[in-house]
Picture 1: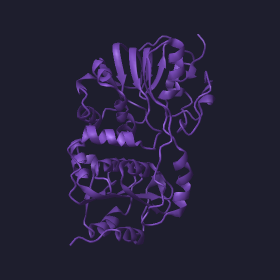
Picture 2: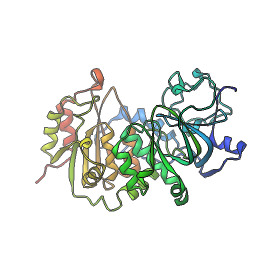
Picture 3: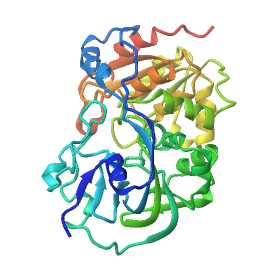
Picture 4: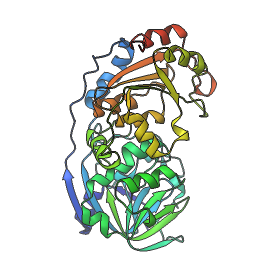
Length: 376
């Protein structure tokens, strides 16, 4: 058999006759012009501004793939005829180095831009297509999992909201929901809150699984650039009765993480505590507790990390302060705030030390804390 072919699901469906339901073409949504910061960050704004205005959202669709393959735990999808689907990758920047040549001209940035490098072995696939020796799943499988969804940010904002593309019959008629290892309780609970039956979940580990038929909802945004549609859907499905607001001010700790810690967190928190902030650790809370907590917040301050995702449950107009080192400038939370109607303030500290850990000078912390009135 010839080498694997890389193509899009739309092109493959047109040639093969497989079911394919287009929903929306690629778009470039309007975004905040980045000029509304209480404390200026001109260098960072310049760094982000050009990309901010250019990044689009890919075309949306739901495809049904007979004789499908899913490569775990990465979520890459293929077909038994030797096709790999470009639409299922989040990591294709150097795909050519693995010996793969696209079967057609693939979409160009910014509507579909690769994110990171593909491992040289391309997820352990054999050099040439052939029969799958692993599990074979009869009936219809719905692939919910997506590469990097072991991270709370990518699960909540990029993987789970793909379910919004399904109609009730598609979601209700599948035999199982395919999720990618590792197993996380928040994945199961979020599916349950979204109205799906978690008893139908089947996990995919480090293996290639053959599916008699697979339903695949497309990506709805490029990694790190949050869609307003995703935020709206998450609010409706996961927290329809929340976001009442009570004026709480949250300082989200990263003290229990392995990297990008703020080494003087206690010192910085003491400065914010005087402004009415309470320290919380999202990792120690259930999903329901996190939703309830953040729905009561008017302000969130945190070292940059996935725990800030829960800001989407705040009432629009709330303020999110994103503390980063100069060594790790990531606009992911900024794009979340834009999509959620929240105010955003980046704080750029000195370059990080080994492992990404950093120190925020006390004078910078005091300047940011000055944005908040002290409690009466």
